Image 1 (cartoon, one colour):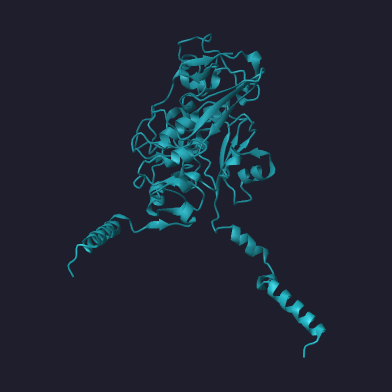
Image 2 (cartoon, rainbow over the protein chains, first blue to last red):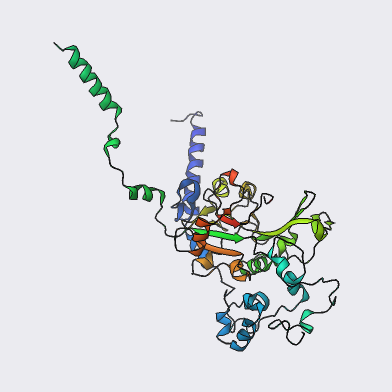
Length: 157
Length: 261
């Protein structure tokens, strides 16, 4: 049956076949509707595991640090700074002590000013923190030159 | 020959019989109803923010960026802290410089375009900080609009993005009423807070919760009645953001003010 009328039909059928073959190889086997249904759950199931395997950087509690540095842990636990986890200033532990063997300690004035710039905000916890005016209180000096972060008012009163 | 009495009797019986569906004779079991609303999972992550406790130090933003490998100097972040200053003459000023990555170390309010507002302490009526992050909505509009199925919700309620599947069309970024989504500068795909899915599935807390010294941020499981976060949400006064959008957000705020959008 040779007719110019059928020719476009074969072209369209061919295109459909190509798309279906491409789709068969391209779309992962675990792509489909998840437990949340068509509207919310349409996804590649293996991606959930990908996110679960993301590297954890912060140990998240100071007990990990305490197992090797009990002296440092105990010193800070006696001060109001006890509420701050070690990693906030010492950086994320990752696999320390293997990797990295040394943590870069953040000692900058800017770090202290995050909490200790006095802001007169009556309805916020900020106003209850002992604060300074950074432009008046020894501007340009690093806080750690006078204050020990593990015992901030040591020898200063 | 049918009598008038029998005709009326039968008519009432038949019409009554047709009108009563079979299900009306079934005795409903409360457990069955509960199961219909319960999808079988034992975990549904929710977030609780106490705006009275937040002091705007921004340690949460720093920790989030380092934990989740968000380029540190790019002006994008998965979580941020907003500062609200309400003056006595009725002005509402709000800012969040760099998403509060470096905290709030200056009383000046950043108005954008290089302009700043100096508010004297005597003029301040209320001032407070509001941490923000993805609400992991029960009805997430970002998931509905994704044309390729790259963003989805896991049974525990967290909305994730498949970086290999995302085509970067940005529909989800436009759809989110809370503005929590952005393009990842390195992967060029949609990026969002995952409640630190890699941490909470290992029994750890999120990086922002761990980094917060003041306990202003907490994460909990709303399906566990003994969870301290659940107890607070169930018994204390908490607010949610943009309730009118019908997205059913799952971040609960203590001390939320109407000025917070």
